[in-house]
Length: 146
Image (cartoon, rainbow, N blue to C red; front, side, top):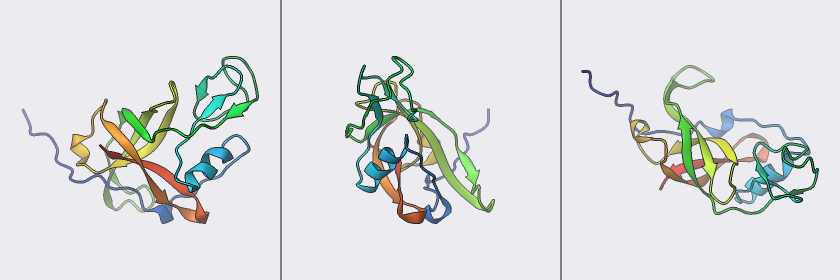
């Protein structure tokens, strides 16, 4: 049996390599992130959370939305270990994750994780939000191992 691969510390992609675009359904999320507040789209009619945000609630078809501030913690739902920077192909260890956001049942968010070695990331790992400045003055939520 072979030894497990040792990748070393998980890093965040450099913020100057990340650009986002917004639309009326996603802009409240990004504006909250600029204030270092983690939020998720919640239907104002039935309370259903949905991420990514959509124009209509998939449960009741309402167009009304709330954007509550959430605790900023989450649980890793899925992950992958990447060993090349997607922009230039240089060796670079980063771990994209999908997290279940605490306080927003059913809402999941794609992000990167840091604060641990890449080989130590696991499903069920508790993480807390940290903020990364990216292009055009926006801020990206990423997560750090608790």
